[in-house]
Length: 473
Image (cartoon, rainbow, N blue to C red; front, side, top):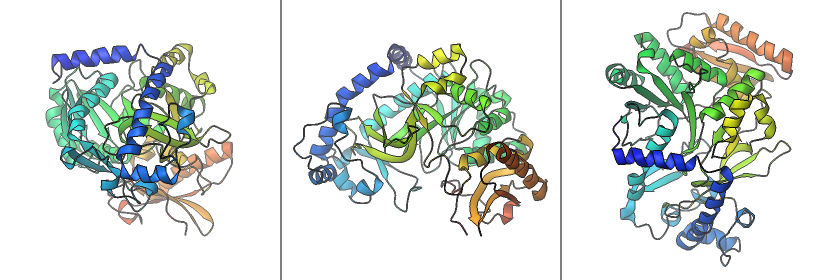
């Protein structure tokens, strides 16, 4: 029955039961009741927010009671907070230094400077229960003894009271050793990992002859977007029955370092939707459909275009957070769920999605679907895994850039792969040409490099997000 105390299991079961008797509208109504206190505390207790709101002429305003009133407050970005103010100015006045327990940096992917998430000892006490609630909801960890192997980089740490946790970071040898030796003692194993390092882990495990089927693996993917082709490739390698009833065991989660982990999460119902849309049109550029809890964060889609896609802006509703985060632009693009999104689902699964108590957004990553190169980055991520035999010989790393007016897709071969780079390039080029024949547009020329000759890093630094696009030559 796992490591959880009986009272904790009962409390999780009760909370999930209560939650599933709610609706997105009822949760939103409860969330708005928390809004005035969260914004009022920022204005009163944070020196940084006092300055920002004074400059905006809001120092005498009453805290917003609804979304319309919230829209009068400025939207803030990393530069407005973490690059302008010190942590001392950002942290609320009523949070003494002795209450601080941890600091988590952002990835730094959006610029040269870092943003920070700060936690208190109160958060330390509450976080394990929140993690365990999410794990029980996704994987039934209160009913099955569970080993969780955390392979996320940058010091992302998991603490639990219901599962056994191994925080190994980006060490494939350590992760495989723990899984092989300790994994069989448990009824299921959960990998928390990013897609690019997952490919490295799969390749290393294949060299060891790892028996994944005996470990009953489940996966939580984070850090970057991925394609349904990759989800299928990963599930096949791990012997996960992805599309069988109850088989949605490869899920993803999205957090923001300065806001918190698992702000957005896939459910079985949202995965069914994305896979149904993929089956209907394998070449479509699909968003990731994420659910979220309105009780934790108020979500806005700001400045939407004709398709409803706009900037993702988040207000955190915890009125005891060390750093208030009010109307924070994350750098992501998203839209609301549309009725036409559901048309690909058969009626039973459509009804299941509509019964979710959580609101759902369509997340499109940190850039519009088609970047300045004229060839969408997400299409590269899809075609890289469309032919499993080709994908098995690649590392997962690639760079897309325009060179002397020619768009080139540079791909790294897996270390130790025997397939000739020219053969692998021909396989990928055929997939590219097939898409161009149907969709039109620019067509990149594919080049596959031996692992050690790849110009953008022979050995990937999995501690940092890999940059798939570099400056044009």
